[in-house]
Figure 1 (cartoon, rainbow, N blue to C red):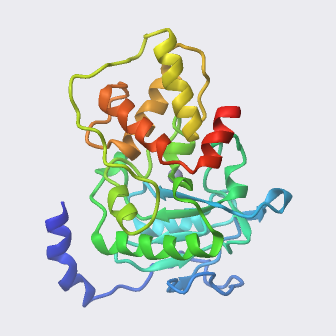
Figure 2: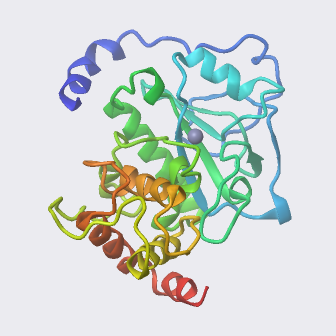
Length: 288
Ligand SMILES: [Zn+2]
């Protein structure tokens, strides 16, 4: 809850803990951080080159989904885990960089967005320390969100990232991932110029498409989700994959009710978002 986050802000800031560096990580070769808001560099060996020298123009936000910070940092920075991210944002707002932005961090896994499958090559990955759905899913502290916003704003300016290309892991991998989840305050990010947001249409008893439905209305829904960027087959069948994409859409854009049912509010919110895409993106989607 936001009030709790406010209440604890003062006392905790007076006793800042050291970053719990995982053993064996500190001796590695370091690098100059890409962002002025980075407080520590903790290099990870888990990265490669961006394919075809692709310049990143997308930000993918994650939560770590692990019970403690040290375990999460070890996983991201230890050789052999094959997992990493460019940045990690701690609960107290400190920002660590683990992989240079020029390199391809391994954060998205099998993922898809707007016709691209190699999301790691086209994106900057940010891990936000949060235990996630499996470990109680606490609220994101305000200072942590403020840090995410500051970090993203810098990347957006340096990399010319468009608002609709600031996404959650669940958006690009809806069948596998829930992060950063429905508690992530996308509305607050958008009000600070980060990401694409429209106020969700009110939840009412409007038209409903659910698992098992078939026909043209389902096809129209799938087409709209695909036009926005989601990886979804347009087959006119509200199958399990469609349920997962609708669920991912709701986690991001209509977080008040995440049930995988395409109700009137979900559909209206989706169409409002589509209407807010840049003209060239909408044209490309219509042709594709
Ligand atoms: Zn993730």
